[in-house]
Length: 140
Image 1 (tube, helix red, strand yellow):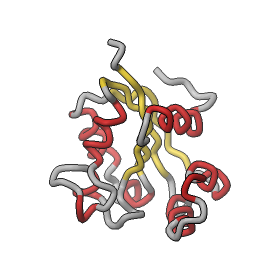
Image 2 (cartoon, one colour; image 1 turned 180 degrees about the horizontal axis):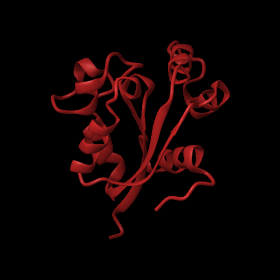
Image 3 (tube, rainbow, N blue to C red; image 1 turned 60 degrees about the horizontal axis):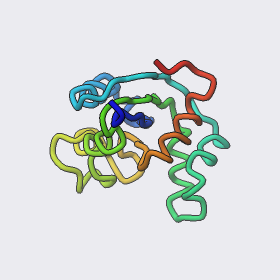
Image 4 (cartoon, rainbow, N blue to C red; image 1 turned 120 degrees about the horizontal axis):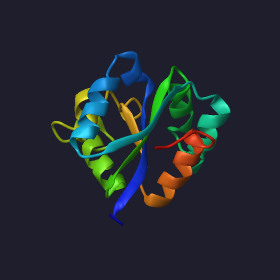
């Protein structure tokens, strides 16, 4: 069971506003990812800027910060074999127009920014990002 890992998935404001939380969780669970923690929150501008700090200075950064603070998000810790890759496969390409049929972003994404979900891109990012959303909270 040493290949069981954890990753972070965040359902973005557009998908939350359109009531797609359950559908997205169902797709993730169907991919053998177990929800180990889940919380709805409205991140502050400072928190979003810190979370996406690696993108500071890029042209899309301001738009991303505005969007991610426009409403509640649902953050989840997912657990499973190869969780980071598995989650990213289920999410699909960042650009919903390029995402494979049946993926979360193909079904619920609207644009590069409003692409329905964020997912950690590596084990290192997952550890940092899980701490960001779940530091001090129970993970089961």
